[in-house]
Image 1 (tube, helix red, strand yellow):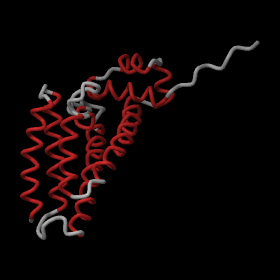
Image 2 (tube, rainbow, N blue to C red; image 1 turned 30 degrees about the horizontal axis):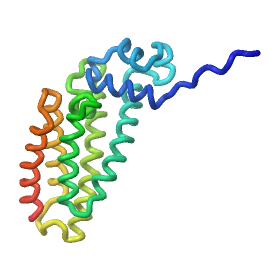
Image 3 (cartoon, rainbow, N blue to C red; image 1 turned 60 degrees about the horizontal axis):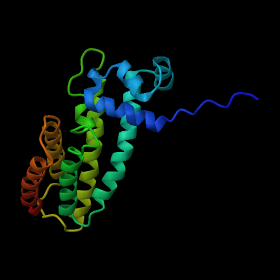
Image 4 (tube, rainbow, N blue to C red; image 1 turned 90 degrees about the vertical axis):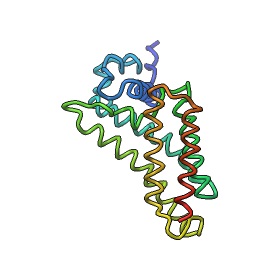
Length: 199
């Protein structure tokens, strides 16, 4: 009898492991040795599958974005702009301090420090963050058309504000802030959102 087929490479599971390494160590800090050990592959296999360390990061970010989009769909499905903001802020506070994940957010943590040869990484991460901001913006444009926001409320400013707050929460979480601290920030930020949403 011939030998059985080799076990198939589980790309999603491997990318989840790579995502965790980038999240914990940032792009610059994550080594090929750490990545290959976490993914249970050897360096030639990594380069064959993803081309480079940066190629692996982009693939891991695609995986992260896929999960984030599913979460954003639920956030944006709230019936009012206020509920969208509350879900976005409070669930960020919970997710960024979830012990099942590294603290903070991969889209911020991944590129806080990048040196020569890694200049594209912060731009890649910024583009992914902008996607979330754009999704909020579109939802608030719809809310304004439905008279769910005040006449002078600016959907772009509201979206940018929420994005900035959650980026700050991410940095705080990575520095050890707990869930209660982030939820307090979310609550105060919601009051500011309410004022701006009145227009």
